[in-house]
Length: 75
Image (cartoon, rainbow, N blue to C red; front, side, top):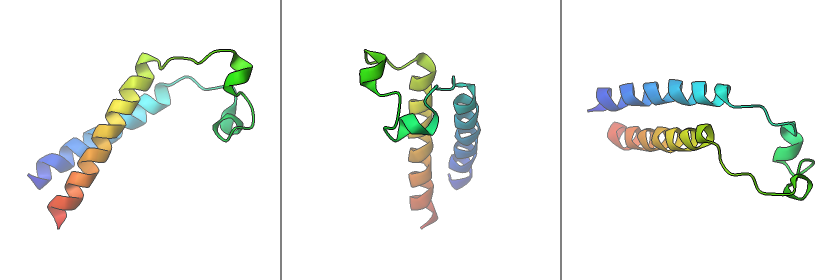
């Protein structure tokens, strides 16, 4: 079971990296992440998540779930 979950975890790790690298770059850079520029008031409307963002969120949740599962399996 540990080997199976480890393989799934490794595959998810690669998939998360690929999906993150495929995403479009935001114009604000790190300033937008910390509230410096590119706020929602500037853009005029809240933008919905794209399909690629949804896939990233799902893969990240699965990745973290397998990480926690591996932690409990190792004990």
